[in-house]
Length: 574
Image (tube, rainbow, N blue to C red; front, side, top):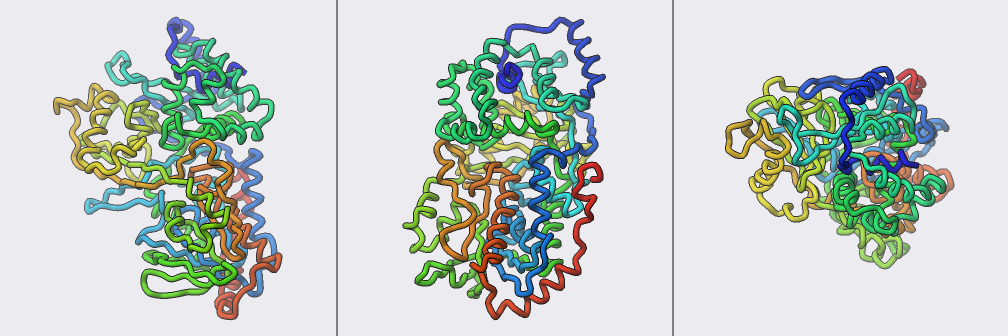
């Protein structure tokens, strides 16, 4: 119980300092247990952990396998999937695996949605968001294995690293608090070690207080976690007598990392879900970076998988209108190119704010759809800064800044092979909360970011201009990103099955346990695909005459396309 409390309480500074002899002895024991991490400025990747044998991982794999386990339909459905982000591509991938014909319609000229990336005139890439892949992402990890690209993840040391604002190390650089998880200890003992060995910032009364608050979550599990959606993080802390300092020092950073908002708004369910996954799965909190831009390293293989099985993937095909009949069912879609197309089923995988603009008026009074008015995307800004030199105090991992304006950041020239540069650093930083800056100029945002970096890099980035200089920058604004996971909104998140007979929803805002994340988007797509397949098998969806010729081609393509080798879905063989 004390150890669980320490996971959040560990970041709160305490007065104690471990004697040098104890630190040395702890480090020696840590070496034996498998604690390992590179020094600042040094690149070091780690072998892929076993992320396939946990209960959630097995469930994710079984769901994936179910789409290709049965006979292919003789007359498959032609299904419109509106939105080419992870949710839409996931939907299409699993529909294609089941032998149906997904038609992905993405409005922009690039796939990916909130994981899209762009290339500038110098050939440098910049992304919509700073994305990391957790060991506790079972559906995402399964998807990568199914595509045969799991080796494109660069796994980092199993560490959670937080800046300590205002504190410097012996060399005068920013001081960080580390939580290092030994590779030779299973969960939850690896987390216990990480917490216990970080004694310089722990106070046992705070650990006990927070641990007592977590006791119901330990005893009652997911049921209790879901019930806490009625409270914000701050409200939960106050109700459980946790000192305000824990909230101010710890959960501002945690809330910004999880949903880009402050703990006064964030649902406590989000925090408890993350803590639960990280403590139950040995490598749950271990992070990896994709080895290059998502467009070429993830999205392209996903689109190729879909088209190889008879599906279609279109960009620059923006939906303009959803037409419905007297029974409220969708009759056709109108696109920006003037075309009108009819399908057998329809899946919306666009963000909730966009869907609300596209929603047909006759649907708005239905409780399922009217509840969406309270789901709103949170603004996020992603900042990329290229410096004229290599920063020496960065670490090959994801870093939590704990600064006023920044959430997490990474030196992409160090963590990612595709962005590697031995002569200059490129920092990618998440600017959050971004509400007060979303309408600011790029120059104003960069200036505010640098004000934070002067404190994070006191020896290398200096306000007087004598340190590292920014050679160029890119700022990507997303006015409505993932849905804002505020307290008391859980019941308003829609199921993937709508009350409209031939219409389904996908997206991280829909009901699934991984909330607003890449994992949530992928899972929502699988669940939407599952709902379409079940409706077809139950006779609720029938293919139209126009889809029959293409359906035969799709079935043949699906049969001819190579299925993932069985050992690709077994953890020990991946």
